Length: 408
Image (cartoon, rainbow, N blue to C red; front, side, top):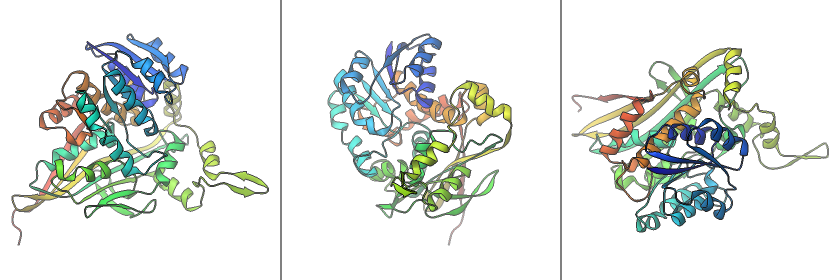
């Protein structure tokens, strides 16, 4: 029987906690957060949950809540990763997080490398630390490795996420607006010709074709996948030279317009004698994402105008001397279906459920590896288990393989 601490029970952490409550192998579920309302709701609605008010800035407080657990699931912002890793090592338990960056003290590549560099500490204690688990990064990495393993050589990897939801109630983002704006205003990083390259926000726009949707505008976006895949290129991705993450949808279009107007700046301005920070004003005025069931229901009752999306992993390379392109379409419930199934949004469902599948692997001892590593390191048997369990949650993958029978 396993004891688990879920630290940070916001949209994703609470989804993981709810699923863990249903797992027979879990004897005790601890839910830690600085918000007593969040932990109290889970304690009152889940059979195994006990709430802990935890200030994650304090290693002592985390250790206190984690004493005796087998796994810490870190659902906090990446700035807390080092402290939570310290806690896992101190209490001798496995570790899982959702993301590696960005962080406030060092660059994106350095933040990811810092996590990976802790691998010897976890290996020495026989512990597993699985990082970057969610939909993207997370599920996307597993899908990527599956495609790469079908090739003899890998040339490029591109992860494309398009998200378009229009409701009669203005909801530009289905996660934290402040986080969303900050992410979109960050300089994208891609792995290009074997090197990491930083570009300007909303760089490299292009119209990309998606089956069932047609062409949609996409731009480069800062994300973990180009970093971990670039760092691990020679280990598990057949020396891939190019990796990029691209994002599109109405939220991106809105953020790009605000960015070009200077409204996503964190620098203060003086207007009519008043000091203001444009980002603070925009974040304050943007409607928050619906979080609780009654809030989501209100949006649905108001009426939906259009919902569309695509999540594609595109990998190109060579197999048996021929050029090959593998496009993997990841399918997951949309907003309405997610709410009917679990009382949550599509964003929380896909990311939270994808993350939970990694948690399930850890608590059921399905990962036979110690140290710190991202999901693209999982082997074939581990990936098969992931895909099988994902299908039970209506998260499936359709592959389209393109190659020419004869090439000059």
